[in-house]
Length: 101
Image (cartoon, rainbow, N blue to C red):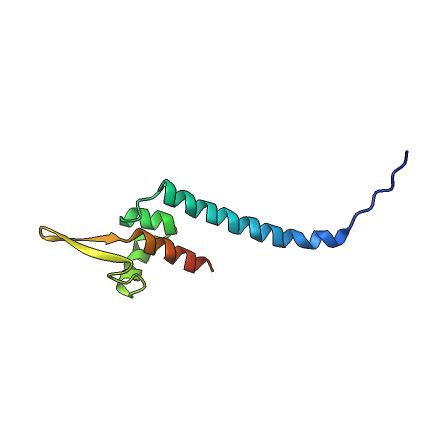
């Protein structure tokens, strides 16, 4: 029983498309996990830094240059003599998605 084996090499061209789709699905899954069981506290600077994989100086730059907009990405809360920046989780998640495109 010698069966002839034929290979269609044209199918190999689909591998990059399949990989890209898998990568996209993995990112969506991670985003859903973050929404259901938050790994990071996106209301705090430390959580935002980890989630976006950026440094403290980059966060400061984004705040200073208006990339993070007050009233949308964050708001300020006054506690005694200190002003605390509280980030908006949904806006930070949206920001990450827009940077990935």
